[in-house]
Image (cartoon, rainbow, N blue to C red; front, side, top):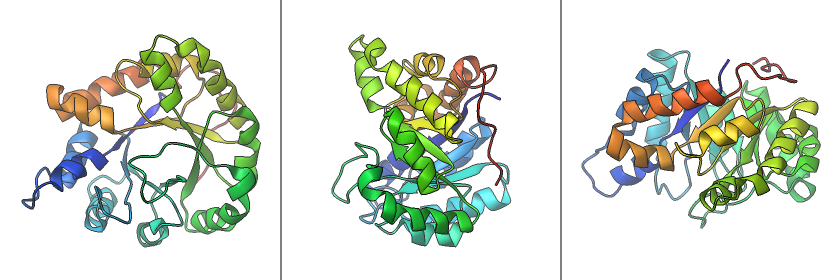
Length: 260
């Protein structure tokens, strides 16, 4: 199995929200991505509705439940800021919990489980009881992976901004060992490994080559930017080609896909 691609459609919604005419359609964008081969769709409904709005979540959840039953919906966000309402209503395949504040422009750090683990544990248990897989957004700190398992998570999503910044400076080798070691520690703890944030067509292959067994990458900003030049379907196909050539398939995997 190659690394799977979940397309984050926040930036499509951001563009749509600059006018009141309803274009571009987030639901139409989801269809284009899925038809091009995307395995999942990621939505991050923030309380201020700066991009994804509740209606988007409702429409895309309905689309995946009817026309695209094999495609996963990944709802991400802070469970203390209204995310649970969407999760309880739609029961997505995956829920990615992110420790962002309402005022943040974008996610910029992972969970500190020494501080937040106790309050996350019942939330994670509640989400899993709904039948959803839970992934925790985590910095690449190998020692923190066992704590994510202790909280009850099924997966971690490694926050990859530091890799992307180092790659752009020609210094990826300085940070990749921490990502590799974190992925291995997560898998030893019985967790699946996802990754996301600032991954793009230039750096994705290098990341997947260095970090073993990444099950899923969630990519939005760069993918939508590439689509302005290449078209959405062609862009998705190019990311999928990288996932197939460099991702999880053929690597030794310590952790099988967890049951739903």
